Each structure stands twice: as structure tokens, then as C-alpha cells.
Length: 202
Image 1 (tube, rainbow, N blue to C red):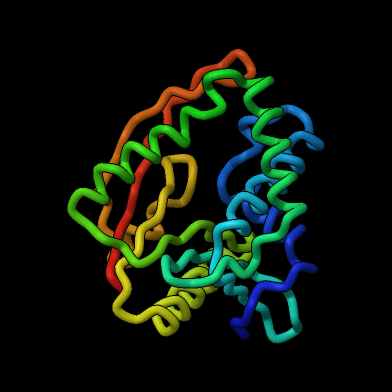
Image 2: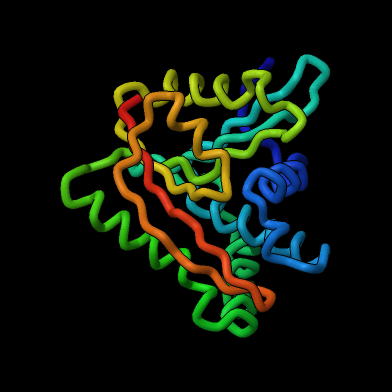
């Protein structure tokens, strides 16, 4: 396995892995809307990252990525057209989903504010997406080890929820320091999620 910087040609794969790994399908009935949202999510995070690590197999196959925002680093993946896409899509989300569009973000902001009262983190894991077919093969662990080597001694945090594979962090010495419940309404259904903030010193 080779780990290096994420290449733009693999963005579509990142979107695909994020859709499956974060269960975005449960929020969208149409494939086009799902893909557009996946792209919005990726661009939203790319605009904030300082480091984008990617794992590749020996045959060059893209296996997964870890996007990290170091508070001291340069936003090296931020692009003007990505900012425009995110801004436009946020407007569309608000138009179609109303109040519920910002619920998730508000809960995360609340947890972060509580966390920051006692902590001064050095960075945040913004996205961790691995090929669903590679789960259990050590791709996620390898990416996390690479982050540890690149950012030794740094205190980091991340957001996740009960719709994702949060157990991965439980098994790797992350501490769940904040947790909130949220009721999301979509497609005439209601779904309860547990939103969580994890932290760890690398």
C-alpha cells in the first residue's frame, strides 16, 4: 500500500466512498441529487483542508482518503469554483429542506463550543472515506498511522454520527467527549441520530 497526496482525478471515487460510508442514500430518493450532494460535501471539506492523504494499492487502485485541517497550515486544496459550488448548493439545500438543512451543523457547533472550553486542538479530521469493499483490510488504520507520523503529538478532533462506522474510532484510542441527539426530517420521515465529537492526541 502506498500513501501520498490525494489527486483530483480521484475525487469521484472519494464521493462514491463517502456516499456509501456515510449512508447519504437514506436522505435522497434520486441518484442525481445524491451525486450532487456528495460533490458538495467533498468540496465543502476540500476548501478547509491543509493535508489530503490518499491510500493506493500496488496496482494504483485508489483505496481511500483522510482529509485533515491543521490550524497552522495553508488551505492548499481550496479553489474558487469549489467555493462557488458550495455556496450555491447551500442555498439549494435551504430552499428545499428549510430549517432541517442546518440542524446537523448547529448540533456540531454546539458540541464544538463545549469541547473548546477545555481543549485547544491543533487540527480536525474532516473526512475519512475508504472503499467499502476494502473494509477490514487495514486501509483506514494505515491512513491514521500516516497522520500520526505527519502530525505527532497533535491534539485532534472529528465529528461523526450513529449513521457512520464510529466504532472505528472507539477501537483506536479516540475518546468520545461530546454527544447529542438530533431528529432529522426528510422525505416525510423522521430519523434520530446520535451526533458525536471524538478527540485524541496523536
